[in-house]
Image 1 (cartoon, helix red, strand yellow):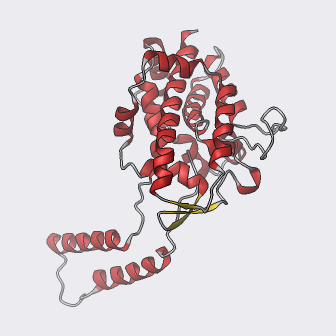
Image 2 (cartoon, rainbow, N blue to C red):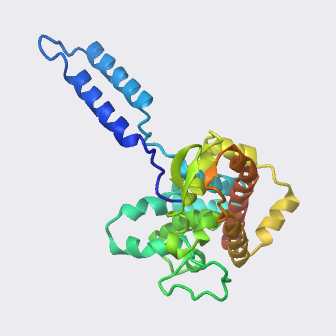
Image 3 (cartoon, one colour):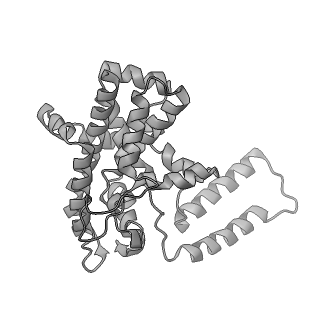
Amino acid sequence: MSSRKAHKPRLAAMNATSCCAVNILWNWPLANQTFTQETIMRKFLSLVMIFTLSGIPSALAYEKTGHRVVGELAERHLTDAARAGVKAILGNASLAEVANWADEMKSNPDDYWRKANVFHYINVPAGQTFENTPRNPEGDVLSAYEEFVATLKSKNATLAEKQHALKFLVHIVGDMHQPLHYGHAEDHGGNRVKVMWFEEVTDLHSTWDIHLVDKEKLSFTEWSNFLDKASPDEIVAYQSATPLDWVHEGLKLRDEVYQVGDRNFSWGYVYKYRPVIRQQLLKGGMRLAGTLNAIFAE
């Protein structure tokens, strides 16, 4: 579930302060200083403390967690045939490992990846239905899902084509269970809807991509362990829904999510939507498993 990262209003000031401190610490005193292994280690630990206390964000971001949860849950519910089919395509890589590949490839300068950005979402205007909204001729998340499923079923597709299709499919099934991937075009799926998250400025899309998941402070495996408790009947119900049903579910939830009130999100918002984000991640995992089980059963 991808989006721009949230930025703290005070980040620029802290960066400047921290950079100054780093420069002083690393370069003073230069005279008569012996750079032993012990000296370098002391400097390194001091730098770690500066970055930690200053609030500079870690290079490890939580927006990847939700997609990994969907991949991990799906892998736990594959049939033997699907597990073998996935392994034949991905080798030893797990579904969780490849779950963010489609986002990571957005940095690839090849023109394909600029055009492929539309595969992550569908824009439906407020007050309109999916059926009454003209489809993007360049594609959308539903047409991409159908295309990648067809590639994986094809006996003529190359291994490289199937690798591309499978890695993209794992990602967009997650996208299809994040309601703001059915957002309004004018605000870029909530990316331009500014809100406060525990007194820090962010946006509505990031709230659902990052903050609701991050607030639990769980790894993707912990998330998966907590969620992987659906009954057989519940799994059947989740998997019996069609991808078009997923779109309608997402649009219904999207309309609720756009009701931002005073835009000041705190514990009340977490309390309200924690069960929803848990269910969406669980549905995504079970439905990805159901999709792959059906593909490799043929």
